[in-house]
Image (tube, rainbow, N blue to C red; front, top):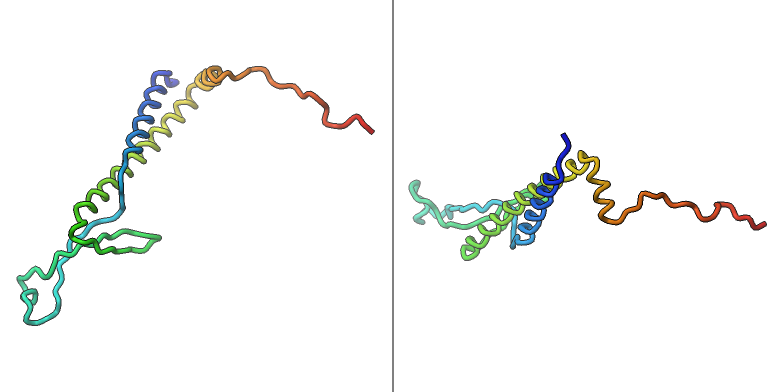
Length: 142
């Protein structure tokens, strides 16, 4: 069963909607935000007891770069903004996947619709007539 013109049009509309949502993507960053507590090692400090949580929290952003784990310390005042950037990155990834999937479906639908390509060419003003050579390849001058 070949795709209908309506199906192709629906896919185009979906692709255009995803493209518009991609244009709205704000600041983004990949990685995971981790809250950490540490013990300082001083025997008389409050963190030395077993029940103590330790000093902190300190915040680290961990991500992979060229196969290696990279950690960046995030100041406490920037934690909420960093969370928003990570969420925006995840939204971007989902939109990019949706764009690829939709585009692939659209390309397949165009291949499956035999008259779709000729209809698009006709809309663009394409000609069915082939062009003729105006001169021969070899020069007639000696």
